[in-house]
Length: 387
Image (cartoon, rainbow, N blue to C red):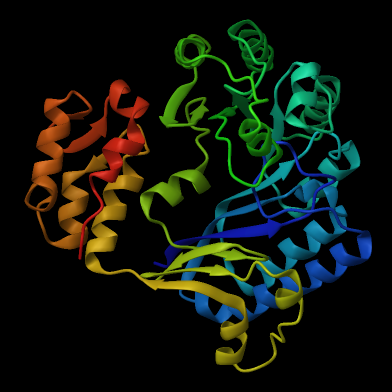
């Protein structure tokens, strides 16, 4: 039986950068997009031999704004994967869409190409807040896109939302969340805004011009989110992700569970056979790679930040990635993977955080409590092992 692997495809193009975005993305013309997709296909073909003993359990096309490029390009990418990789019959194939560029004819083409899951980047149902965020769509655009997706037969739809950003209030967040949940979407991702260096929001904060919700209001927003999601039948399976039962994002779960993945395209990350690396973030560098050259030459131009994962690295990642899932990590699975008791490796850290009420144990699984999730960055940093 072939081991599962996940594929991530990065489309770095967008109409313009949002005020909070630090992702590798930029505006482009159609000629650039076409040449980039051609190079992506070359990379996919080049890497196929590496994955010959694996079966693809999920494909995630992200960005940037994948829906900005021609639907034919998406079909060509998926056709290349289908021809060169073993695809599991129940493979989850997701594409991220901006409501302003997701037209019904594109949804129809995605469906024919094999896409079975959509992720719509709404962020807020308030048009004034969308302008603050720098989004190019309106809530009405989103509703049209959502209706079109349903009419084309998509029955697995995620909606991305952001909260705790400048000028947002608990009142407007309540309205956004209820407007989305009343649509009965299958999955909702909710991200607290993080002001990243290099973004317009960061520059505004440096000048003292960024009016953020108070700490009390942010706490109230988070509490309402958890209560409202539960009321509408959504289960929180990861810090930022909620789903109707059976609609958890398998690609997300695979990432937090240590399933190997390979990223294709500009700046994409990979974790495969105890190695981590990133593709080059240089557009000219990426476009100039000759994928018909020998493997060493290709890899020297393509791969950066290459890290061999030690046993200590892998044990740390097992815990601090796995504990992002609300089900936590299994002591049995840890023992099977590393031939060691988790308590013998992380006993001090586990005892400390259980004593503080930040981690709980049920006989096999260690998981963060609600309090632990609120300070997860601090808790999970305890599980970084020194070599």
